[in-house]
Image (cartoon, rainbow, N blue to C red; front, side):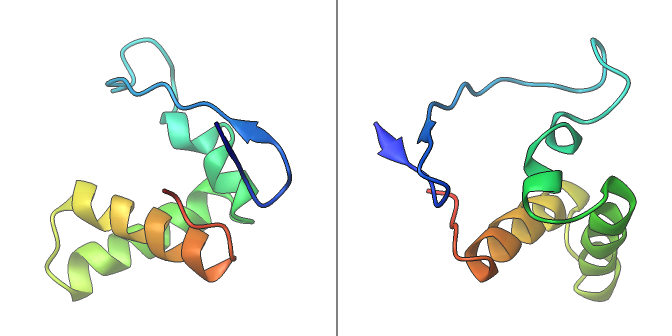
Length: 77
């Protein structure tokens, strides 16, 4: 098991979560707030990557998650 920057043990469960069971994207519940963003600010940033860099929307979201977590000193591994 790996520990995150907050000293907590992290266990990841990967699954497809496309708002069929929840009204919001799964990232909005814990990950985006842990990065210090509101959902609106995070999605605006990801959408800028999508538009300005001509990225696929999902790739832009993933790029934002990975780059922001690395910038905060807590890279997603």
